[in-house]
Image (cartoon, rainbow, N blue to C red; front, side, top):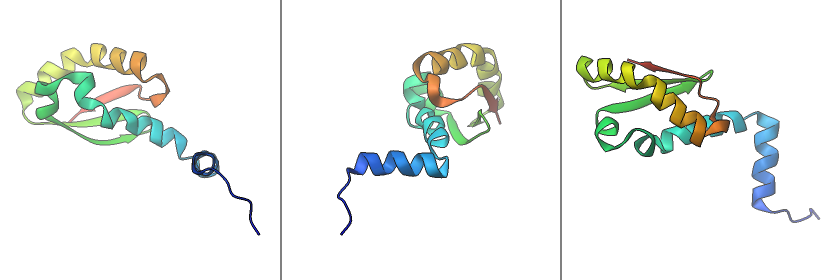
Length: 94
């Protein structure tokens, strides 16, 4: 008979074995995007993917894209301060 184990322990073990934990930490930023950038920006953007430490963000218009390019350093700073384990090091606005 197998020994009963806590679900949290099983998830941690799985994430280590499958090297999933880095991806999960990066996707934490996706779930918190509105809190990071605010409502107006969140309504005009959509995170497409997170890959190799790069957050790919689709932007509604070129005007928003231009504005966000100027805001990128402050957005990255906020991500690094609030989600240091996310691994997000760059943002590409598309």
